[in-house]
Length: 144
Image (cartoon, rainbow, N blue to C red; front, side, top):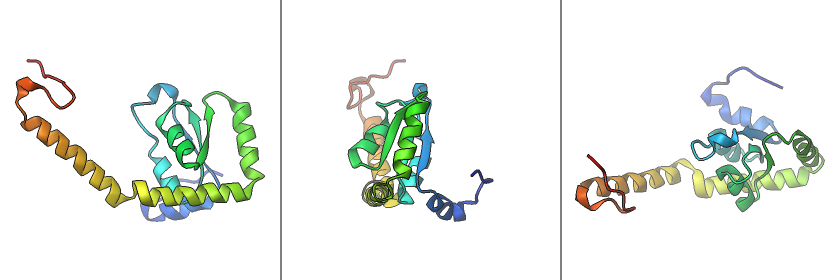
């Protein structure tokens, strides 16, 4: 079922309707972006089926926390099998979704994400105040 754009104040309702969500990323985009919907799906307490690079960020998180499954981009037959397996195993879907919500609260909720951004910005600030000829903490030296 496809619906029109939903306003932000209805997002939680929209994401909670599905039993499983699909997130797709072209393999060549891996390392440049993460499908932001992934975090909303986890917040809604639903498992994710990711289609893309098997070695990407989202597949690592799905595997690490047991909150979804990954299919290589282009493997339609496996995608169909994975979706049927999840359809036929509601207890597993529920457990993955429950874990997804718990991980979201522990790892990715807004206060936690903001604290991580503050750490990044602090490192950038410290690095920018260092002697430019010395390079940053990673050894990078700007060139003129």
